[in-house]
Length: 394
Image (cartoon, rainbow, N blue to C red; front, top):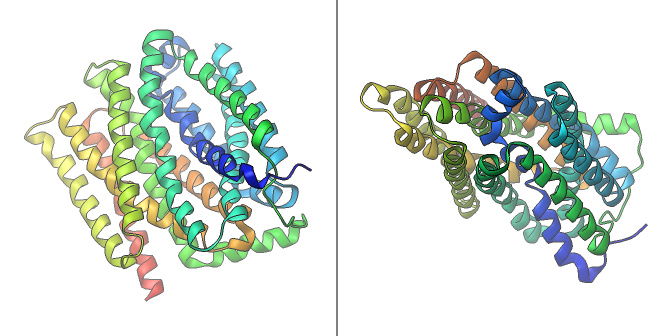
Protein backbone atom coordinates (compact mmCIF):
# COMPACT_ATOMS: atom_id res chain seq x y z
CA UNK A 1 0.00 0.00 0.00
CA UNK A 2 1.26 3.47 -0.89
CA UNK A 3 1.93 5.53 2.26
CA UNK A 4 1.81 9.32 1.95
CA UNK A 5 5.38 10.64 1.78
CA UNK A 6 6.59 13.13 4.39
CA UNK A 7 7.56 15.71 1.77
CA UNK A 8 4.02 15.52 0.37
CA UNK A 9 2.32 16.26 3.72
CA UNK A 10 1.80 19.87 2.65
CA UNK A 11 0.19 18.92 -0.67
CA UNK A 12 -1.86 16.22 1.06
CA UNK A 13 -3.15 18.78 3.55
CA UNK A 14 -4.01 21.19 0.72
CA UNK A 15 -5.91 18.46 -1.17
CA UNK A 16 -7.79 17.56 2.01
CA UNK A 17 -8.86 21.18 2.50
CA UNK A 18 -9.92 21.40 -1.17
CA UNK A 19 -12.15 18.33 -0.81
CA UNK A 20 -13.74 19.13 2.57
CA UNK A 21 -16.17 21.65 0.94
CA UNK A 22 -17.20 19.06 -1.72
CA UNK A 23 -20.50 18.34 0.03
CA UNK A 24 -21.48 21.99 -0.31
CA UNK A 25 -20.02 22.35 -3.79
CA UNK A 26 -22.05 19.38 -5.06
CA UNK A 27 -25.25 21.21 -4.13
CA UNK A 28 -24.53 24.93 -3.97
CA UNK A 29 -23.22 25.20 -7.51
CA UNK A 30 -26.59 24.40 -9.06
CA UNK A 31 -28.86 26.27 -6.62
CA UNK A 32 -29.33 29.18 -9.09
CA UNK A 33 -30.35 26.56 -11.69
CA UNK A 34 -33.24 25.05 -9.70
CA UNK A 35 -35.97 27.09 -11.48
CA UNK A 36 -34.40 26.34 -14.91
CA UNK A 37 -34.13 22.62 -14.08
CA UNK A 38 -37.80 22.55 -13.09
CA UNK A 39 -38.73 24.10 -16.43
CA UNK A 40 -36.41 21.90 -18.54
CA UNK A 41 -37.37 18.64 -16.83
CA UNK A 42 -41.06 19.61 -16.71
CA UNK A 43 -41.01 19.07 -12.95
CA UNK A 44 -42.47 20.96 -10.02
CA UNK A 45 -40.44 23.06 -7.58
CA UNK A 46 -40.76 20.32 -4.96
CA UNK A 47 -39.52 17.66 -7.39
CA UNK A 48 -36.29 19.51 -8.22
CA UNK A 49 -35.80 20.42 -4.55
CA UNK A 50 -35.84 16.66 -3.93
CA UNK A 51 -32.56 16.37 -5.87
CA UNK A 52 -31.01 18.19 -2.91
CA UNK A 53 -32.86 16.08 -0.34
CA UNK A 54 -31.78 12.76 -1.92
CA UNK A 55 -28.19 13.95 -1.75
CA UNK A 56 -28.50 15.09 1.86
CA UNK A 57 -30.13 11.85 3.02
CA UNK A 58 -27.66 9.54 1.26
CA UNK A 59 -24.71 11.72 2.32
CA UNK A 60 -25.88 11.80 5.92
CA UNK A 61 -26.72 8.10 6.28
CA UNK A 62 -23.52 7.04 4.49
CA UNK A 63 -21.36 9.03 6.88
CA UNK A 64 -22.74 6.99 9.77
CA UNK A 65 -21.15 3.86 8.27
CA UNK A 66 -18.21 4.84 6.07
CA UNK A 67 -16.13 5.99 9.05
CA UNK A 68 -15.70 2.41 10.27
CA UNK A 69 -14.74 1.28 6.73
CA UNK A 70 -12.16 4.06 6.49
CA UNK A 71 -10.71 3.14 9.89
CA UNK A 72 -10.48 -0.51 8.85
CA UNK A 73 -9.44 -0.36 5.17
CA UNK A 74 -7.71 3.03 4.95
CA UNK A 75 -8.49 6.38 3.34
CA UNK A 76 -6.54 6.44 0.10
CA UNK A 77 -7.96 3.72 -2.17
CA UNK A 78 -11.54 4.32 -1.08
CA UNK A 79 -11.14 8.04 -1.81
CA UNK A 80 -9.80 7.41 -5.34
CA UNK A 81 -12.68 5.04 -6.14
CA UNK A 82 -15.25 7.48 -4.72
CA UNK A 83 -13.88 10.40 -6.78
CA UNK A 84 -14.14 8.36 -9.98
CA UNK A 85 -17.74 7.32 -9.24
CA UNK A 86 -18.64 10.90 -8.32
CA UNK A 87 -17.29 12.07 -11.68
CA UNK A 88 -19.28 9.45 -13.62
CA UNK A 89 -22.49 10.37 -11.75
CA UNK A 90 -21.93 14.08 -12.49
CA UNK A 91 -21.56 13.49 -16.23
CA UNK A 92 -24.64 11.23 -16.18
CA UNK A 93 -26.75 13.98 -14.56
CA UNK A 94 -25.56 16.49 -17.16
CA UNK A 95 -26.75 14.18 -19.95
CA UNK A 96 -30.03 13.19 -18.27
CA UNK A 97 -33.53 14.30 -19.19
CA UNK A 98 -35.21 12.37 -16.38
CA UNK A 99 -35.58 13.74 -12.86
CA UNK A 100 -35.75 10.14 -11.57
CA UNK A 101 -32.33 9.26 -13.03
CA UNK A 102 -31.01 12.45 -11.43
CA UNK A 103 -32.41 11.28 -8.08
CA UNK A 104 -30.43 8.02 -8.44
CA UNK A 105 -27.22 9.81 -9.41
CA UNK A 106 -27.62 12.25 -6.53
CA UNK A 107 -27.76 9.25 -4.18
CA UNK A 108 -24.46 8.08 -5.74
CA UNK A 109 -23.15 11.62 -5.16
CA UNK A 110 -24.14 11.44 -1.50
CA UNK A 111 -22.45 8.08 -0.87
CA UNK A 112 -19.22 8.97 -2.68
CA UNK A 113 -18.95 12.44 -1.14
CA UNK A 114 -19.41 10.87 2.31
CA UNK A 115 -16.41 8.60 1.71
CA UNK A 116 -14.30 11.50 0.42
CA UNK A 117 -15.15 14.08 3.09
CA UNK A 118 -15.09 11.74 6.09
CA UNK A 119 -11.73 10.38 4.94
CA UNK A 120 -10.27 13.85 4.51
CA UNK A 121 -11.49 15.05 7.91
CA UNK A 122 -9.94 11.94 9.50
CA UNK A 123 -6.71 12.67 7.59
CA UNK A 124 -5.99 15.59 9.93
CA UNK A 125 -6.35 13.39 13.02
CA UNK A 126 -4.01 10.84 11.36
CA UNK A 127 -1.28 13.42 10.65
CA UNK A 128 -1.57 16.07 13.39
CA UNK A 129 -2.11 16.22 17.15
CA UNK A 130 -2.37 18.67 20.05
CA UNK A 131 -2.73 22.38 19.36
CA UNK A 132 -1.97 21.91 15.65
CA UNK A 133 -4.91 19.50 15.33
CA UNK A 134 -7.16 21.91 17.22
CA UNK A 135 -6.05 24.69 14.88
CA UNK A 136 -6.89 22.66 11.77
CA UNK A 137 -10.25 21.34 13.02
CA UNK A 138 -11.31 24.89 13.89
CA UNK A 139 -10.64 25.76 10.23
CA UNK A 140 -12.99 23.04 8.91
CA UNK A 141 -16.19 25.06 9.02
CA UNK A 142 -14.35 28.10 7.62
CA UNK A 143 -13.02 26.08 4.67
CA UNK A 144 -16.40 24.38 4.28
CA UNK A 145 -18.00 27.82 3.89
CA UNK A 146 -15.96 28.33 0.70
CA UNK A 147 -18.55 26.29 -1.21
CA UNK A 148 -21.57 28.53 -0.50
CA UNK A 149 -19.40 31.57 -1.29
CA UNK A 150 -17.85 30.46 -4.58
CA UNK A 151 -20.17 27.79 -5.99
CA UNK A 152 -23.49 29.66 -6.44
CA UNK A 153 -21.63 32.71 -7.77
CA UNK A 154 -20.10 30.66 -10.60
CA UNK A 155 -23.21 28.54 -10.89
CA UNK A 156 -25.33 31.61 -11.68
CA UNK A 157 -23.03 32.59 -14.54
CA UNK A 158 -22.79 29.01 -15.83
CA UNK A 159 -26.58 28.74 -15.78
CA UNK A 160 -27.02 32.00 -17.70
CA UNK A 161 -24.28 31.26 -20.26
CA UNK A 162 -24.41 27.48 -20.78
CA UNK A 163 -27.46 26.06 -19.02
CA UNK A 164 -27.94 23.99 -15.88
CA UNK A 165 -26.05 20.99 -17.30
CA UNK A 166 -22.75 22.91 -17.25
CA UNK A 167 -22.73 22.82 -13.44
CA UNK A 168 -22.49 19.03 -13.45
CA UNK A 169 -19.91 18.93 -16.25
CA UNK A 170 -17.77 21.18 -14.04
CA UNK A 171 -18.23 18.88 -11.02
CA UNK A 172 -17.23 15.82 -13.07
CA UNK A 173 -14.13 17.51 -14.47
CA UNK A 174 -13.11 18.80 -11.04
CA UNK A 175 -13.25 15.27 -9.56
CA UNK A 176 -11.06 13.89 -12.37
CA UNK A 177 -8.42 16.58 -11.79
CA UNK A 178 -8.33 15.73 -8.07
CA UNK A 179 -7.91 12.02 -8.91
CA UNK A 180 -4.81 12.85 -10.95
CA UNK A 181 -3.37 14.98 -8.12
CA UNK A 182 -4.08 12.24 -5.57
CA UNK A 183 -2.33 9.65 -7.74
CA UNK A 184 0.69 11.92 -8.10
CA UNK A 185 1.02 13.25 -4.56
CA UNK A 186 -1.39 11.38 -2.28
CA UNK A 187 -1.06 8.26 -0.19
CA UNK A 188 -2.41 6.43 2.84
CA UNK A 189 -2.43 8.52 6.04
CA UNK A 190 -3.84 5.91 8.41
CA UNK A 191 -1.08 4.45 10.59
CA UNK A 192 -2.99 1.89 12.66
CA UNK A 193 -5.79 -0.05 10.95
CA UNK A 194 -8.73 -1.05 13.14
CA UNK A 195 -10.12 -4.58 12.87
CA UNK A 196 -13.47 -4.51 11.13
CA UNK A 197 -15.67 -6.15 13.75
CA UNK A 198 -19.34 -5.29 13.42
CA UNK A 199 -20.35 -5.70 17.08
CA UNK A 200 -17.44 -3.66 18.43
CA UNK A 201 -18.14 -0.90 15.88
CA UNK A 202 -21.80 -0.73 16.94
CA UNK A 203 -20.62 -0.50 20.54
CA UNK A 204 -18.42 2.50 19.66
CA UNK A 205 -21.35 4.21 17.94
CA UNK A 206 -23.48 3.62 21.02
CA UNK A 207 -20.91 5.03 23.44
CA UNK A 208 -20.56 8.15 21.31
CA UNK A 209 -24.28 8.81 21.07
CA UNK A 210 -24.75 8.18 24.81
CA UNK A 211 -22.43 11.09 25.51
CA UNK A 212 -25.10 13.78 25.91
CA UNK A 213 -22.82 16.75 25.16
CA UNK A 214 -21.93 15.05 21.85
CA UNK A 215 -25.43 13.93 20.80
CA UNK A 216 -27.12 17.23 21.70
CA UNK A 217 -24.26 19.09 20.01
CA UNK A 218 -25.04 17.16 16.83
CA UNK A 219 -28.62 18.45 16.97
CA UNK A 220 -27.38 22.04 17.28
CA UNK A 221 -25.09 21.46 14.26
CA UNK A 222 -27.97 20.02 12.24
CA UNK A 223 -30.18 23.00 13.07
CA UNK A 224 -27.45 25.50 12.16
CA UNK A 225 -26.83 23.70 8.87
CA UNK A 226 -30.59 23.67 8.16
CA UNK A 227 -30.54 27.48 8.25
CA UNK A 228 -28.20 27.46 5.23
CA UNK A 229 -30.10 24.70 3.44
CA UNK A 230 -33.58 26.19 3.89
CA UNK A 231 -32.37 29.34 2.18
CA UNK A 232 -30.60 27.29 -0.50
CA UNK A 233 -33.81 25.44 -1.37
CA UNK A 234 -36.25 28.35 -1.20
CA UNK A 235 -34.08 31.40 -1.95
CA UNK A 236 -33.73 30.86 -5.73
CA UNK A 237 -37.52 30.67 -6.16
CA UNK A 238 -38.09 33.78 -4.03
CA UNK A 239 -35.43 35.77 -5.90
CA UNK A 240 -36.34 34.62 -9.42
CA UNK A 241 -40.13 34.26 -9.09
CA UNK A 242 -41.17 36.75 -6.38
CA UNK A 243 -38.61 39.51 -7.05
CA UNK A 244 -38.27 38.65 -10.79
CA UNK A 245 -34.46 38.62 -10.75
CA UNK A 246 -32.04 36.49 -12.81
CA UNK A 247 -30.00 33.41 -11.88
CA UNK A 248 -26.95 35.70 -11.72
CA UNK A 249 -28.65 37.73 -8.96
CA UNK A 250 -29.38 34.47 -7.15
CA UNK A 251 -25.67 33.65 -7.38
CA UNK A 252 -24.65 37.04 -5.99
CA UNK A 253 -27.11 36.70 -3.10
CA UNK A 254 -25.73 33.26 -2.28
CA UNK A 255 -22.22 34.74 -2.46
CA UNK A 256 -23.17 37.39 0.12
CA UNK A 257 -24.66 34.82 2.49
CA UNK A 258 -21.62 32.58 1.98
CA UNK A 259 -19.45 35.49 3.13
CA UNK A 260 -21.72 35.83 6.19
CA UNK A 261 -21.13 32.16 6.97
CA UNK A 262 -17.37 32.58 6.50
CA UNK A 263 -17.22 35.64 8.77
CA UNK A 264 -19.23 33.82 11.42
CA UNK A 265 -16.74 30.95 11.23
CA UNK A 266 -13.80 33.34 11.61
CA UNK A 267 -15.42 34.93 14.65
CA UNK A 268 -15.99 31.46 16.10
CA UNK A 269 -12.31 30.61 15.63
CA UNK A 270 -11.18 33.92 17.12
CA UNK A 271 -13.37 33.38 20.21
CA UNK A 272 -12.67 29.66 20.57
CA UNK A 273 -11.13 30.11 24.06
CA UNK A 274 -13.90 32.40 25.39
CA UNK A 275 -16.47 30.97 27.89
CA UNK A 276 -18.52 28.56 25.78
CA UNK A 277 -22.03 28.84 27.22
CA UNK A 278 -21.97 32.62 27.60
CA UNK A 279 -21.00 33.27 23.97
CA UNK A 280 -23.49 30.67 22.69
CA UNK A 281 -26.35 32.14 24.70
CA UNK A 282 -25.66 35.66 23.42
CA UNK A 283 -25.42 34.42 19.82
CA UNK A 284 -28.61 32.32 19.85
CA UNK A 285 -30.75 34.95 21.63
CA UNK A 286 -29.55 37.61 19.17
CA UNK A 287 -30.41 35.30 16.26
CA UNK A 288 -33.88 34.72 17.71
CA UNK A 289 -34.55 38.48 17.97
CA UNK A 290 -33.40 39.07 14.36
CA UNK A 291 -35.71 36.35 12.99
CA UNK A 292 -38.70 37.90 14.79
CA UNK A 293 -37.84 41.32 13.35
CA UNK A 294 -37.51 39.74 9.89
CA UNK A 295 -41.08 38.43 10.11
CA UNK A 296 -42.53 41.71 11.44
CA UNK A 297 -40.69 44.18 9.16
CA UNK A 298 -42.63 43.58 5.87
CA UNK A 299 -45.51 45.50 7.44
CA UNK A 300 -43.24 48.55 7.17
CA UNK A 301 -41.01 47.83 4.17
CA UNK A 302 -39.84 44.78 2.26
CA UNK A 303 -37.72 44.08 -0.81
CA UNK A 304 -34.74 41.96 -1.80
CA UNK A 305 -32.34 44.24 0.10
CA UNK A 306 -34.15 43.97 3.44
CA UNK A 307 -34.52 40.21 3.02
CA UNK A 308 -30.78 39.86 2.39
CA UNK A 309 -29.88 42.13 5.31
CA UNK A 310 -31.81 39.99 7.77
CA UNK A 311 -30.58 36.74 6.20
CA UNK A 312 -26.97 37.96 6.35
CA UNK A 313 -27.09 38.42 10.14
CA UNK A 314 -28.91 35.12 10.68
CA UNK A 315 -26.39 33.19 8.55
CA UNK A 316 -23.48 34.98 10.23
CA UNK A 317 -24.63 33.81 13.67
CA UNK A 318 -25.37 30.31 12.34
CA UNK A 319 -21.78 30.14 11.05
CA UNK A 320 -20.50 31.20 14.47
CA UNK A 321 -22.55 28.54 16.27
CA UNK A 322 -21.63 25.85 13.75
CA UNK A 323 -17.89 26.54 14.02
CA UNK A 324 -17.84 26.23 17.81
CA UNK A 325 -19.83 23.01 18.00
CA UNK A 326 -18.19 21.32 15.01
CA UNK A 327 -14.67 21.66 16.38
CA UNK A 328 -15.85 20.42 19.78
CA UNK A 329 -17.65 17.31 18.51
CA UNK A 330 -14.79 16.19 16.25
CA UNK A 331 -12.20 16.37 19.03
CA UNK A 332 -14.04 14.19 21.55
CA UNK A 333 -13.00 10.76 20.19
CA UNK A 334 -9.45 10.92 18.72
CA UNK A 335 -8.92 7.12 18.82
CA UNK A 336 -11.86 6.59 16.47
CA UNK A 337 -11.45 9.65 14.26
CA UNK A 338 -13.08 8.12 11.18
CA UNK A 339 -16.16 6.99 13.08
CA UNK A 340 -16.43 10.28 15.00
CA UNK A 341 -16.11 12.21 11.75
CA UNK A 342 -18.74 10.02 10.14
CA UNK A 343 -21.22 10.20 13.03
CA UNK A 344 -20.80 13.97 13.26
CA UNK A 345 -21.22 14.62 9.53
CA UNK A 346 -23.91 11.95 9.11
CA UNK A 347 -26.03 13.22 11.96
CA UNK A 348 -25.77 16.80 10.73
CA UNK A 349 -27.04 15.93 7.27
CA UNK A 350 -29.66 13.44 8.46
CA UNK A 351 -31.15 16.17 10.65
CA UNK A 352 -30.72 18.77 7.88
CA UNK A 353 -32.42 16.66 5.19
CA UNK A 354 -35.53 15.98 7.32
CA UNK A 355 -35.88 19.49 8.75
CA UNK A 356 -35.05 21.56 5.67
CA UNK A 357 -37.31 19.70 3.24
CA UNK A 358 -40.10 19.43 5.81
CA UNK A 359 -40.00 23.18 6.38
CA UNK A 360 -39.68 24.11 2.69
CA UNK A 361 -42.48 21.70 1.74
CA UNK A 362 -44.79 23.04 4.49
CA UNK A 363 -44.01 26.74 4.05
CA UNK A 364 -44.20 27.88 0.40
CA UNK A 365 -41.39 30.13 -0.88
CA UNK A 366 -43.44 33.33 -1.06
CA UNK A 367 -41.11 36.02 0.27
CA UNK A 368 -39.46 37.47 3.35
CA UNK A 369 -42.15 36.44 5.84
CA UNK A 370 -42.19 32.79 4.76
CA UNK A 371 -38.38 32.61 4.91
CA UNK A 372 -38.42 34.36 8.30
CA UNK A 373 -40.91 31.84 9.70
CA UNK A 374 -38.68 29.01 8.46
CA UNK A 375 -35.70 30.57 10.23
CA UNK A 376 -37.74 31.12 13.40
CA UNK A 377 -38.63 27.43 13.66
CA UNK A 378 -34.97 26.42 13.38
CA UNK A 379 -33.62 29.08 15.75
CA UNK A 380 -36.30 28.30 18.36
CA UNK A 381 -35.34 24.61 18.25
CA UNK A 382 -31.67 25.61 18.57
CA UNK A 383 -32.47 27.65 21.67
CA UNK A 384 -34.38 24.75 23.27
CA UNK A 385 -31.58 22.26 22.49
CA UNK A 386 -28.95 24.61 23.87
CA UNK A 387 -31.02 25.03 27.03
CA UNK A 388 -31.05 21.22 27.47
CA UNK A 389 -27.27 21.03 26.97
CA UNK A 390 -26.64 23.75 29.53
CA UNK A 391 -29.00 22.08 32.01
CA UNK A 392 -27.25 18.70 31.66
CA UNK A 393 -23.77 20.17 31.99
CA UNK A 394 -24.66 22.27 35.03
